[in-house]
Length: 604
Image (cartoon, rainbow, N blue to C red; front, side):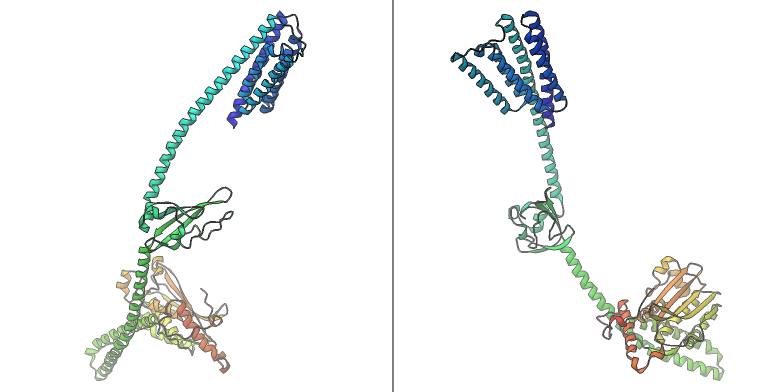
């Protein structure tokens, strides 16, 4: 449209300039050669001035208005000149051809036909007036000079306007040819793009289906045909619901679709009756008004993933059953091993006592080695028994009332020989008035023994400090134990696997210090079973600090009216073990789950 307006503006500008030039030349000729100078002094200057005004309108962009005024005035001028100078015999009638040519140059074909009709009507009117005997006064003299000027104006203007028309036709033809070449080039590009897109679709490993607005299949790629094992004619033009029954077409003005662009699991129904699990995604197509145009559906075959998932699920179940069988086997075998081992240790101790009474010192060292090895093996078996009980869900919680100070002293008596052996200094901060608590004595004592034994094992000629205190975390009363040492410490990598069973810092640590790596794993399991926590902070070469917090009950609150709270504590501790993954709910012999308000609060 902008190109057409530019052409009209150029043509109209040229016509007006030519008109001004013709008026100036014709006025000068008539002024020189004719006696009547009225036209030379009034008509031609007036037409030139009017053309100049129309030229200003053209420059301001009023193209249609300026062109219409010019054509109307030109038609009136030719009609008036013909009427007052010979009517149907007037040489000015040739000016109508100029009007038609200018209308052709400026406007569409309909305007050309309008002015042809007006000109024909005017000429017919002239003939009718002459045949009826009406004589129109002649305003200009009938001289050869005037006829000459009129013919010169007609021929020159007609030649110029015809040349412009021919030029316009040639330009239009050139533009048409250029457009044809451009169209051919665009067609080739479109065909190349189509082949490129077809190659992409054909090479896609995923199934791709293009739908129309009604949900019918328009395009499918090779992967779709291979997935569904069918021919194109079995799918093209058919409803997509034959393949995906749950599919719903998009609604207009709102992207309200049941399927989202996110990947979801669906099942394609093949023409041969097979159901194929796929990972499906769709993208709806809309025009600018929100009217649905169709959809693009992409799907990936996940049959092998489903099979692998089923295999993994089956393997997981088998592994869980094997792990449970292993745990039960270890628990049973540990009992069977401890019984004869206790007898070996007992007979070794009896022989040591008898050797000391009889003064047989030669065999005491060998008997002590038997006793030490037996106790060491008994400790390992006990650790394995505890771990297997935890994994099998057979570890029970036994709450009792005990004096914290007495419990701490008993623990220190157990581990002091190991601490003294490495020439470590033991520091204890345990208030004498800490009093009695109601909790699981055995597991609390075992946690402290494991932590203090570890501190003694990895500290040489250093300090080991035990701090005991009562604290309140939220609404829960807790016993807090901090075991700190100045030993070898641990790196961040070692801390990441610290509480894993049968795991130590590295192979060098295992060779130098020995052990099975069960103590800390059991300590954490016990802490979480009791509803508590265990935390560690360490720096390589500086030392480590373990903090244990265990909930307890005040024995003074265990009146007959509150005995029910005791069962709640046991149930809450077992529920904490279940949440921590230490007990398998399907296999553990646990009581009914307590209500949430009876669970102890856990914070780390």
